[in-house]
Length: 411
Image (cartoon, rainbow, N blue to C red; front, side, top):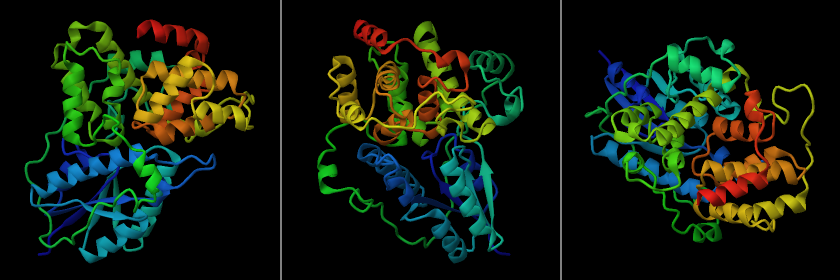
């Protein structure tokens, strides 16, 4: 009797804890083949001539993949890593190792779903099924009190109903053992240069203060939940790890419940609000496909311009606007890849109020430079700053001057 082999295609789920795909694969197979593909489409420039993945996030990704690979090797397994399109790589591996099925976490943004569809089509040529799992949100889709098509557009109604009528599942334990074929081919994690970054870009990396990997993410979470923590980052201390999947939002939630953070109601509410916004943005992209990548969102009225004032946008990108609070914040983003949400509101609102330019270009700048970039969250945030988001109340925001004053007071 032949053994059942499942290939686990890792994407934005670079962890062992609370990983439904991995646990289901272990339960439904005799042998597991873990694979990660460095898809070249994520290392090209987009139509705004911004990198889809800036060098700091690329380094963060490499570190996260490397740690997962090391942890799997400690279990006598491995994480096979390749540079190339998964629709080209996965079918070849399936044929080579007699894989019966491929498991992966489903994404919601258009580029990611198109890649899944391409993989699915290629696998099906060989009668191999691509099995989808939904494991990126705090509340599981199956546990929502409404079908996706009936999710309230208003964030506060969404929040009240979901908190009242749904529960967060318990996190799944990390596996203690993974059985893989004994003779998996040796693969190496690529260098930044092999991903297409120049020597100049690599030299500019510096110390961003965020090392990638599941274990580092868990330590950052412990720091955040410590009642003595006094940093300004709050959610943005752990959001890079959640975005890349090194931390599960479900795990974060239960750690919050088991900590003394509940004694600090304000900080607890801030964290919960960000976790719920993250869910809201992902579910909205399911309800309204691609909505956060449209200039005017779900609005019939054309509120925003497609034009770009090249000079003003360049000044904004290079922290040369002449507005101290704006320039300091952008410089922090460029040097660290991480800024608070108050700072994000400031510079995005400055962009939408002062630059008379396509806001998608500003969101694209965040996509390149933020360590915690996630398509739904980043573009959903910007759509509300541009007054075309799906939650009407959040389409209004204080002027950037008021945001700057508040920011200096908080510091």
